Image 1 (tube, one colour):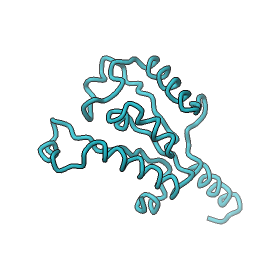
Image 2: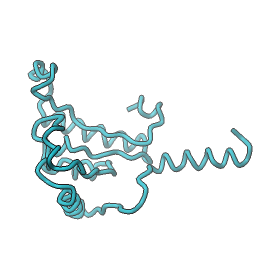
Image 3: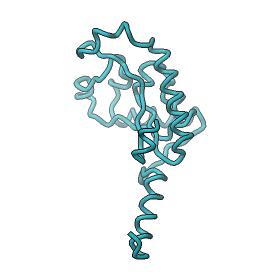
Amino acid sequence: LLFMHQLDIDMCGMGPYIEHAQTPLYAYRDTLLPLSQRFQLTLKMIALLRLLMPDINIAATTALQAIDPMGREKAIQIGANIIMPNITPAKYRNQYLLYENKPCTDENADDCLSCLEARISMIKHRIGKNTRGDSLHYQKRNTQTHESHLSGKN
């Protein structure tokens, strides 16, 4: 978290590590924390990052939903503020499986958006549409840079 703070990041996608049977690390799966603990650790990391960097974008990843059906919603409630629809055409989704139990692989892009709207509404939030998704952190930095150039201080 301190490394990300030092890098002065604008956005972070933080999700639990989920092993995949077709990777070399799968052989070490028994040495990993149980999935439920990885899930809880990820939520804690999101909450801490939100406290450390209150104006960045933090994505609620689909990997969270692969562990807990309400994983992305829990991440939004704990500090994440970005949820990304899966717009990969349905016929290609099964070719992009970074981990097992990846959610929404059988939906088309329109179904995904409708589902996300319902899920986000269920936790009393709303999806921002037709606007740029730049983080407040990015906007502040660019405003300061722009103002420095205008005043001749760079």
